[in-house]
Amino acid sequence: MKNTGEIPANIWIVKSLHLDYMRVVDEGKKSLEHDESKIFKIDYVKRPKDGSLVSFYVFSETDSGIYFVDYKLESFNPILEEVLGDTSIRTHLTGSSEIAADQLENITVISHPIKITLARVDMTTYEVIITAKNPFAYPINAKITQNTSSWNVSIPPRETKVLNYTIYPELGVETTIPPAYMEYFDFQHNVTVTFASDAINFTATGIEINGDLPYEISDYVEINLSITNLINITNGTFNLTLIGNETFEYNITANIENVSTLTVEFGPIDIPEGEYIGILTFGWDDENLTVDARNMQKSAPITIFDTDAPSNPYPSIMGNHTGTIKPNHTVIATKLYTYPCECTGGHTEYAEIGNATWNATATWKGYAGDWHNITFDETVVLLENKTYTYTIRTGSYPQIIHEQNYTTLDGSFINCTKFTDANGKKYTNWIPAIRLWE
Image (cartoon, rainbow, N blue to C red):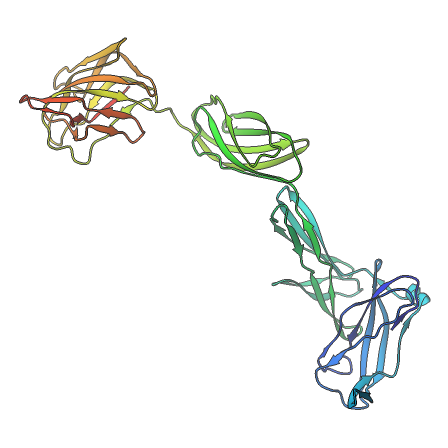
């Protein structure tokens, strides 16, 4: 075929199914420049009978659309050729085609029926859009395929079907969106035609920030972040929004140039107890990137000291305990509760807690009312990571932690420096199971 037009075109030949149904393999599209000629070959899987008719459609594609150029009906006439001394049969059709300029001007232009485009949803998310158009005045049933995905669609006359899906390309790495194919049966010309879109090759550039908000809101919220910055952002603002009955916002401006990891800390945070939706974002110029969002909770601060009941509180006996307490958070208490052994009246008869500058005491009032608890003569305030001494004299059979040093479930510390039982025996691994609370 020869292109005698003034503009380049992609040409391909499709075998018609109207007269012959034999399987063939064509060479696909070939580009023809102005005044250029090329040979197009179609291989038959099974040789047609001599003299039988074979038919083909010729299509041309330019920037302005798809063109139906010509219909060829030829007689199959094998021609003997001498190749390297051997006689072989080569198949030649009796005619040839030229695409003239006036031919291109006068034929019907069909817009390319399938194309793919790419749209950025946010910094790390893209949407692939497949647009399939029916260029004819009658409805068609088309099969759209891309990679291993396929869709069967019905498209009314002159209308368009849009398919889309989401991808999350890796930043800085070239990504290929493969061609999409549209196959339908052209009843007007009695032929099955497949069109292909172009592929898209692109490299996603942007900024990706990953980090997890904590579930618990404390006085300060600290988040460790990993940063991929491929658009040379220098400065931006991290924003923590806490949405509950009221909305609270905390902001930190940070320089992220040449930074791969970053720790941001918001606070002091003074909000009511309750459930919140936490949203962490990063903003720069007019752009905004959501880093993390989750349910968060602001709980009442822990102000008690509690050893909890030991798994084995025995042996037990009344006596005098001395030791130290070092809480890992501030403790505010007015009472001391003693865990009793089962079916006993284990209790504390006297307690004293303090340091070199102050102390508070509490005395038991007997088996009346709330006898498990005794009340201090002033509020006990134990500061975080400060050490205090205690003296506790017990009665009956209190539960005992048989260790010299013990760490509570919340990380606070208590030890036994000496325990003298009711019989005068001395130990260094008898800690009374108690709770300091309001």
